[in-house]
Each structure stands twice: as C-alpha cells, then as structure tokens.
Amino acid sequence: MNQPRRDPDDINISGGIRMKDLSGLNGCLILPLILIGGTDDWTPAERCEAMMPRERAATVTLKVYPEAHHGFDTPGANRDTQGSRGMHHLQHHPEAEADAIVQVRTFLETRLSLDGEKPLGS
Image (tube, one colour):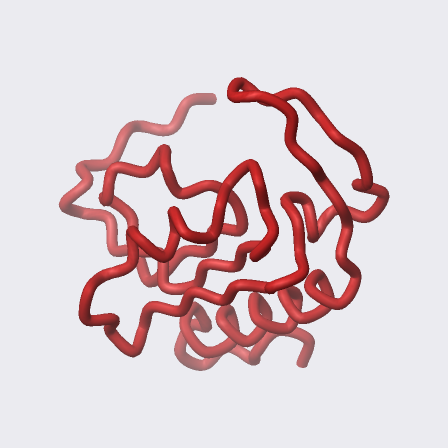
C-alpha cells in the first residue's frame, strides 16, 4: 500500500549517513557523517572534501580512510569493475569497515536516539 507523500516542510531530519558518492545529492539532505576511502578511484574523497561547508559545523564529520578503496565496507570486494567513466577498483578493507561500523553506531546512538530510548545494543 502506498503511503501518502508528506510535505517536505513537515519532515524533520535529525541526520543522515552516506558511505558512497555525494555527487547525486542536491543539498536537500543533512549529512553529518560521511565515511569514504582515500584511495577510492570511483568516488574520490576530494569530491566530498570540496562539498564540505567552508566553516564546518561541529555536526558535520567527514572521515577519510587513507588506504581504503571504493567498497571498503563490502566483504569479498576485491576486483576491478567497469563504471560509466572507465574501470574502477573495489576492495574490502576490514579495518576501515570495522571503524566505520563504530562510527555509524556512535552516530546513531548520539544523534538519532529518541528521548527515553535505550542506546543501540543496550
């Protein structure tokens, strides 16, 4: 069953997480946590860095994993793949993935928990 569309002015976004490309966003979402690989040749970290506000608010975090490629959070990823702009390397990076999980859990516990609710994993 389709849900009725809500008026965008009635939607209160507390936060969001994006672990991939930001180029398709038009600025309508708040993204206080961005996790990306520093050696990502499909979605270069520099593109995310360039989109960061000039004066970063304390609520915006961009974490670049220097040795991580695109797909760092995908176990089994270790291949080259064709993208719309050529070949790109995907590679799992267990340490970056583990830290990203901690970063996301912490973000959710501190930013999106509801009053009176127990933190995740409690």
